[in-house]
Image 1 (tube, one colour):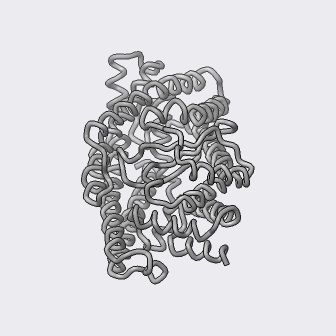
Image 2 (cartoon, rainbow, N blue to C red):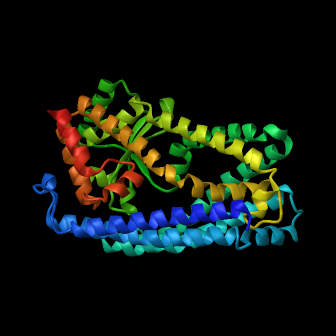
Image 3 (cartoon, helix red, strand yellow):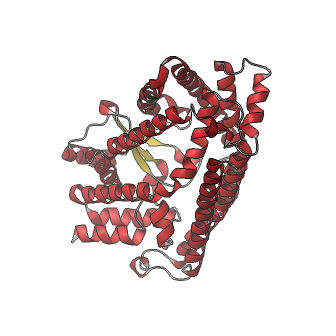
Amino acid sequence: MHWFTAVFLVALALATAVRVWLARRHIEHIAARRDAVPAEFSEHIALAAHQKAAGYTIAKARLGVFETLAGTALLLGFTLGGGLQLLSGAWGRILEAGGYAHGIALIASVALISGVVDLPFGLYRTFVIEARFGFNRMSLALFLADLAKLAALGALLGIPLVFLVLWLMAKMGGAWWLYVWLAWVAFNLLLATIYPTLIAPLFNRFAPLEDADLRGRIESLLAKCGFRARGLFVMDSSKRSSHGNAYFTGFGAAKRIVLFDTLISRLAPPEIVAVLAHELGHFARRHVWKRMALVFGASLALLWLLGWLIGQDWFYAALGVRSQGTAIALVLFFMTVPVFTFLLQPLASLYSRLHEFEADAYAARHADARDLVRALVKLYRDNAATLTPDPLHSAFYDSHPPAVTRIARLQAHQA
């Protein structure tokens, strides 16, 4: 066995075992506390709602275990199982091996197979778990229509991008990874720019906010924070789910504020304003740009690493591939990178939680912290978010602080 094969198998086994172990801890921790609402929430959340949240979270965690195991099996099948080599050889009998069409076909095949493996989990999550707990409002026809749109968008945007990447890898010499990185950054910025007006409307209807009182409150908040937005919109999210949310999207003068119709139906106007003040905090503290800079920096380092690995024969052989080339190197690399970077997940989660605390502090200064607390409690209850996550699981995965900690911080700001 090649040394890198052994390293890969150990890393994969460790990542899979940690994921499963954390999920089991999470399930057991929540199950042990499902019969008592935390004292901080006992006046606002009924035991039945708390137990519903426990059941919902446990069901999702159990499904996540099977997804983890399926993902591990698929990765082994593609690599040491010979799947990538088989696909490359099959397309090589139809298309010129190593050519652009061959590379695009190989990458598209991997994406398609991965999507097919993920599909049963998506169906079960939507039509069994979400339906069982009263959240799903999506029909099978709408689910399939969304899937078809996503596939069409993936082809429309992905195929030209893959061709550009393969062309740059072939034409730009040893520094190809730098040019590919620049193309990747440009593509992501373009996607973020066109998403609000060209992509999002393919899936949802966006109508201007008509509630004059709520609009006035929001415009007053924007003026107070010195924030400009192109428009206030309500999204018909209720046709897919009863979960509520709000978000900002776009850059510069094209920024939009989007409220889910389910959010408007549940929260009072002052509470909605407090939620938006939190979202404004992310912009005011430049969290979006900081996260993008972090992602772009990491992608530059990874592409540099790929630039070195692509010429190493052992990289292919140790992962079950005899063929060599730019496309197969790309697929191999980005399949295996998550295995080795998995243990960095807690750092990413911690960074995100720090941003959430900063956004909450901003909201407490520009709106009433009590309104944000009331809004969060309603959202925890109505979205069946568990109030008792396993601390280790939460530290590893959660992008938002645990409910008890977050509410305590807001109450301290209020005081």
